[in-house]
Length: 532
Image (cartoon, rainbow, N blue to C red; front, side, top):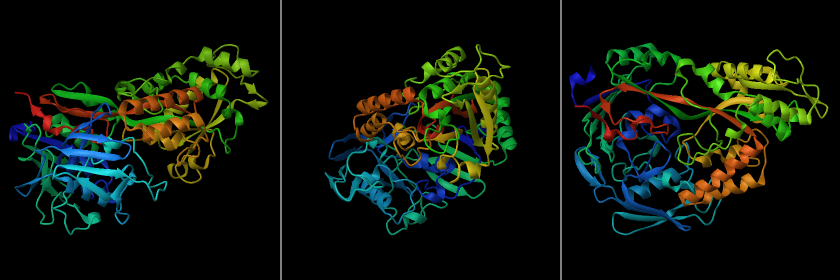
């Protein structure tokens, strides 16, 4: 096995190379840029747990008030810089905020940071710092006032002293290092080396203030060939893989000496119902029709059809939370597959449909003078979506609803003339978030930037806005739960299931935990250890 080479080493397969190690930049915003070095080397105020909650990391205390945020940095929080120990201080928080707030930097996202006044701050000594929420010059991109998901701020810190004089857009193309090219890290590991096309080597940070890592070295080997990656796991050439999901992983599921950990990922497959202009059939504006469609679809059967022997999980019953998150409540569960209830609901509003659920049915409902017939769109080439549509089409036919196939090239589906234009009836696709329920706001608020359904509810808007501002975690959760319950009542969209994430590792490697959040299984590398 790989650990024979070095008993305190772990070898991980990486599926592809990276463009750099600063995933906050548009050049490098993808998973492996984080997982091959950044996640292990750069820590911040909080770290996201597998249940979506944030817990303190480099800070001993933090708070958010109606005026701003404050942090107390742990006394033992230090940077490793080429063998030197340098304290983590308020200057690193200030530098991080100002770089993220700088419009000249090509950042992917400034959510939350844009709410802070980057020009002013207060500090008490080197280890305490406070920032104020902006009160003026407010825009949609840079709003004023509190940011509800404030614990996600400063989850990655940048070393102010080591990057002095460097262009933020140009740092870390082949290292996580200071201006002198030497490694820099405040996390449990530092990026000791990186070789293009081959991989990276991480070594334990001797100045890490948390639990001392039992694993002294983590080697990432780039294996872009899928068969080679699976073969390396089977042979023991690597100790762990975090692959894109595929049915070809089944060969590893029950393999002796391997642990196969499948968890629901933060990617949700869902149906959008077009209520606004652009749909071919106005019947989708009627809540009863959307509810009947929901009850006419067997989501559990779809999961089993799509994932076969790797099917592991239940339908997702929330529009705002993932099933593994602490805020999750199954608000959509009452619309689970119940074709008899769907048939009874349709019979109260329509005529001409079947009297009983019948897979061979040829009678379709007429409702308010319109046929219960809808176009179902999905990105062509998406096998899971095609299987879902075929299953749902047969199920809806049995209760008198006709579905017409309308696959579109992905470039069209996701382009200006696709779902964004509103020219569809039912659309199936997947969305990905970091796990914060606030990220769904633009999908469901009136005239939201990615509200493709045309749905509009002032009640939902009010609750989403309240959650976006609420600093108290429990009260914020309550706001979003109420919003989710309202969405389940109105059914602008039907969550189907979460696409799985899979972690496969040597069974003797302990402490490694699949996290569906952005950190993946690398969020707690300091806890990894080999079983003795």
